[in-house]
Length: 143
Image (cartoon, rainbow, N blue to C red):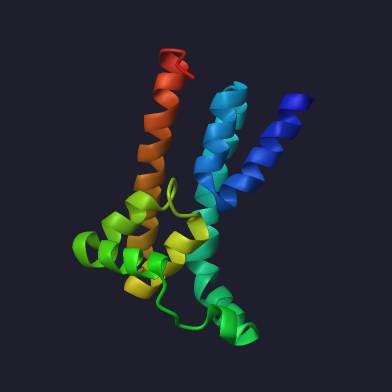
């Protein structure tokens, strides 16, 4: 029962931040069920924010214009540099681990409006990071 509850918590947290769920799974040795919940949560988060991202972004900017208006901060400059040097692939590579899924997808939506391209790139990045973390964890028992 404890592992099921852990998998559910991992699932919902992975919708927002994939990397934190992955670290929790590996450090707590939660196994395959939680790993699948982590990956499925990341997939659902990417799809959800890709198709609802514009609505969420418009609502938040209208509701809190001073907080979420266009400002130039250190993190914004970093994202602009990544966008200029690496494009959508660079944003997608950083999204599951460094950025959160909503931030990465919203930034990708600002970069391009082709949602299929965003979905494909983000999902490939998610699968790459999941493979990079979970293959050593399961095959070689490295935590």
